Image (cartoon, rainbow, N blue to C red; front, side):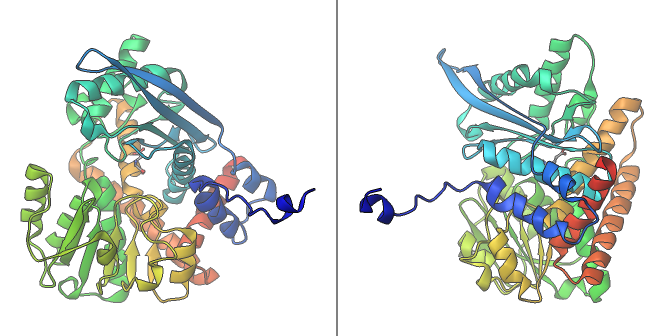
Length: 419
Ligand code: GLU
């Protein structure tokens, strides 16, 4: 071997969120669970991964190709469940990681579903309404063979919504020549959707906040909250927290944020964001990085993966973090925060309200009997409170971070089903 080769720098493997961020959490938790080593090994592999090109006719008559993915990660506890993300940064590794997280999320809250996830590499904001519809229907045509109410059931995720779910559901019914409302959740209520699905992710996180409030004897009026990400989850969380008196002092979207130490007018902020697609120009403007480092009591990352990393974790001052996004903290950020007294309520618990009401929607679709909003809220509250307290107790008895306790709790349930 020539000396050149020996001294050549090691080529760094490209980052892979599944390998780098998802799997290590499993290994950590395995030490605190009853799962056999072979069960843990099996959970490192997806059952199936589908990728394909989606041709879409654009409004100008040209045809453009998009890449779509669907990962059926695990179906041991029930049909795979998880959203479809439309985003320019979607990758196969990200979809696999998100599907892995869904597997553990459904097990955490104890609903009889497995984990799946889908995605399309696209910036939907650059498409017309009709182009978006053709893309959504094209995705379903490509994936119809691997989806179904008892196989794998998609739902909304980042930049997808009820209208898109409605188009996909309609396309599936057309392909199969029947009515299969349980093939997809998060549909419009007029097309078999469930009441209460729209704010379910935030409401589940809000239940976690109220459990912490009870444990710590908080007076909401004295507690400040900052929210990174002002999409569906972030907006509804702000609204719910505000409704019981929490002081929402900062919010941000992808462009940046606003901060007012006396508390923002949450309703006006939501109205402006939804009518102009921008946050109002009130208070002091802050960057997304600054928002994460504010001296607030509660920080809610509600945007995308890897918002808090080893570069900024040391600067996080919040005492409680509620992860409404999937994967907002890297494992290195976890290690740094574990040295502090901050409580991190992990994504697979904190944002499980969305998939829980998706489960309710699927039940309603299968039985054909629809529930009122009160029933949805009551059952969601019961499931979230009970999962929160089981994980919290395990955290205290094992003396581990809440995320590790959560994975261990989920892993015990998965192991029970698999073994
Ligand atoms: N996309 C949401 C999540 O990450 C919801 C999934 C679902 O409702 O199936 O949990």
